[in-house]
Every structure is written in structure tokens, then in C-alpha cells.
Image (cartoon, rainbow, N blue to C red; front, side, top):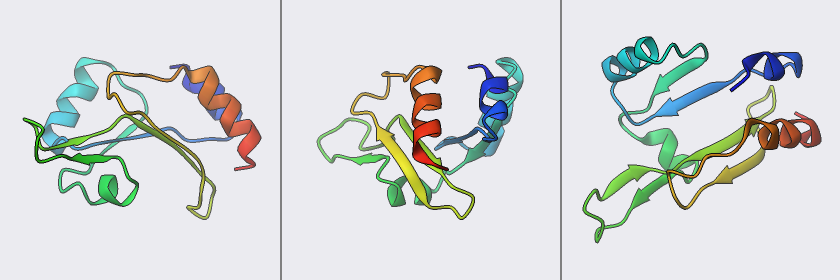
Length: 104
């Protein structure tokens, strides 16, 4: 991901994960992540944003979906895309296009 493109669009990239803070810290260091990563290990935000699978038939039962959100400065969701498959990644260009058209 090219953070400079998002910064040029006056946007801040923030990642949210269900992992515990210590795991995220190690992941950030190991992978040289430059944007902010937040831990939602209690899964409150993931549930509130519809980015959590709670399927009793699933061997993992509760896991985070891959999701993308654009919020304006007041915290209002202006665009959202929640992937059915957590392995499906959006290209940065698609998110940038959504950012520009969202008015956020």
C-alpha cells in the first residue's frame, strides 16, 4: 500500500485486528508496517461494523472479515466494503477511488 497516496488525499489509514496488542506490535515490527494498527481483541468494533463472523458451524466460530471503511472527520461511515472471504484484498486504487467519490 502506498501511504503517500492516501496522505495526499488527506486521509489517515488505520488497521483494526482481532489480535491482542502484543501480537500486533510484533506483526508491525516484522512487516515494517507504517500505518496505525489497533487491537479489537474483544471484537466490539468488529461486531458493531458488521465485520465479524459468528457462525456456530464454523470450526473457528468467531473471526474477523476483511473489511474496508471510509469515515469522515465526524466518524460517519461514508463507504464500506466487507469481503465474504477474508483472503480477498482490495487494491489501494479501488479504495482511493471510493475515498475521492465519498466526499469524506
